[in-house]
Image 1 (cartoon, rainbow, N blue to C red):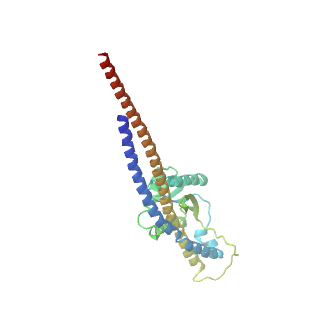
Image 2 (cartoon, helix red, strand yellow; image 1 turned 45 degrees about the vertical axis):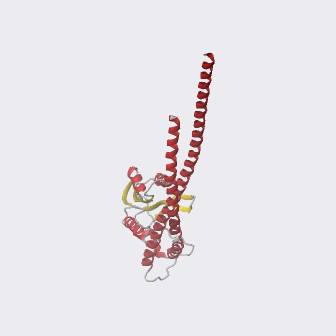
Image 3 (cartoon, helix red, strand yellow; image 1 turned 135 degrees about the horizontal axis):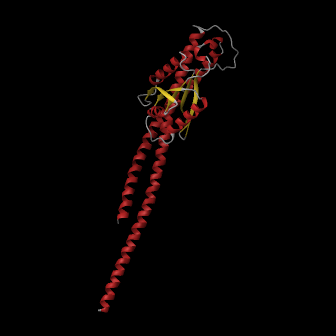
Length: 288
């Protein structure tokens, strides 16, 4: 009986856990729909901004713009975007693995601007990267109120020469079942264009246009990374909770089968004992 009671308690415990994971799966699915719409919305704007920047990059003024200056990398900055919460499968750990590979490949001192509580916790434990600033990714809407201060700090550090390169470590959202942790360079920018460099006259001036267009593009890149990170986190959490719910269901089925087998064995044993006792009484009565 004690073994049966133990199995019943475990079934109740797993059933309760399954209800929690199912609820978390539904919440993540609801958040994912909104996050996915937000992540796919600005894509047309970003593509248009890139086209403008490519056209401007063909101007000779680009070579003198501070954000395009390539110099030996002695100190770098990483903008690391992770989640504020766990229970999202390998979402956060994949970001930190990508960051670790990047630090090993570049092999220069790094500072970090962390977006997301898990990014802050990871950088605090790491010995090869120092934290400059930390932000919560779920503190309000992922709009320019979050992207602007992050980008502005990175631009100031690069312009002052305190860092020679800026990298963005985040997760690209491809679909509900596919998210990819990646590291890409934000600064310095490289003027890539098929058009020959010219000295066309631009109004108000090439430097001002480059500065505004470049800043807006970088702001859009950071904002898009935040939006995709949010969508990726919710997708990873939904899939993790879906798998946990399915595993709990299978475990409940296995435990129920074990319980039924144990219960049947106990009933069989009780019947055998009753039959044995009745037979012993009958034999004793006959002997008397």
